[in-house]
Amino acid sequence: MLFRIDRDQLAEAVAWTARSLPTRPSMPVLAGMRLEVTDDHRLKLSGFDYEVSAEVTLDLETGEPGVVLVSGRLLAEITRALPAQPVNFTLDGAKAVVTCGSTRFTLLTMPVEDYPSLPVMPPAAGRVGSDVFASAVAQVAVAVGKDDTLPMLTGVRMEIEGDLITLAATDRYRLAVRELKWEPAQPGLQAVAMIPGRTLADIAKALGGTGAEVEIALSSGGTGEGMIGFSSAGRRTTTRLLDPEFPKYRSLLPTEFSARADVATSAFVEAVKRVALVAERNTPVRLTFRGGEVVLEAGSGDEAQAVEVLPVDFEGDEITIAFNHQYLLDGLAVLDSDVARMQFTTPTKPAIITAGKPAGEEAASDYRYLIMPIRLSG
Image (cartoon, rainbow, N blue to C red; front, top):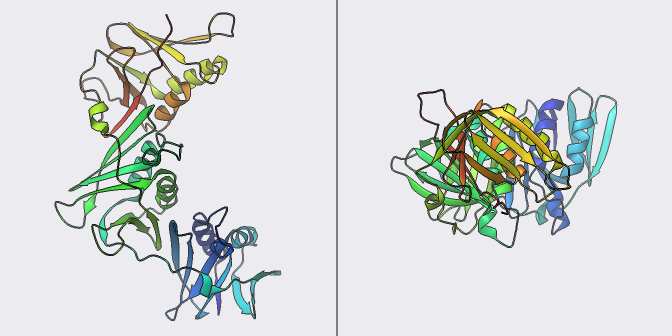
């Protein structure tokens, strides 16, 4: 086996594939990256840990067919550090030799026969723009739970209804919901999948820069059952699905509000960050909306205190409500709008954050971030 390839092309492909490799593999062989040169002069780099698989296919000008398994993370570090010259990869007995200009690395190989076969990709269900998909996943991933003892809260629920995908995630303290259009492979398609949140966030981010469309592969029975696949620009990845159980979140989203505030997103974010400097870990930031302003406060009594006032476009009765400042910042950070719209019912019930729009237009409804308030004493 041997091949010659551009250094940047190889480094990017190796780095992308290495993202899915386990940091603590259950078996040493799972830390390996499989490199295969096919008869039609293509290089396939793949990794698999029985949970997530990743594969990149690159075209080669020259190459001799063969398969080798080497340490994936080591290969990623090596290719990233190589000089900007063509890379030659050859086998020398039980060792792989990487040569680039006057630089030469020798790597030990692993037994290819002990490496698991990559899962078969489920049937294609449809496609969506990679940038739109990456943005949508990032918006809901902020609300994914981190408590592994509650598996259903560590995932992102994907609901497919015809040409509409709804993504939802919650950790009980906030709920993020995003709707986006896509092109289903067949009209009237209906499906539900519960995808590990951290894995989906990594996949969407990695595929988001391709500038191409992402093809989503989802089985409704038979091949690929219990898995979902994503592919774009010569890259494909699969992950196992979680149990589809998920809270009935739609009933949590209020439909009527007693107050509404539109505030400049960037100014609001910076103000929350400043005021939160005096907030202890579990101390909330208090927001009082009245007239044309919002007063942000943190700290109390003998502790350090902070107050800041921002202009807002406000409608409704004066309201004082408190939030975990990090949860508030998480929702604002992914809003993708110059104006943040906050809608309230009472100080003890969840508030909704959406993208605000110019006066006279309705608020955008494709992204909603529900955040639970913290009850204020007294």
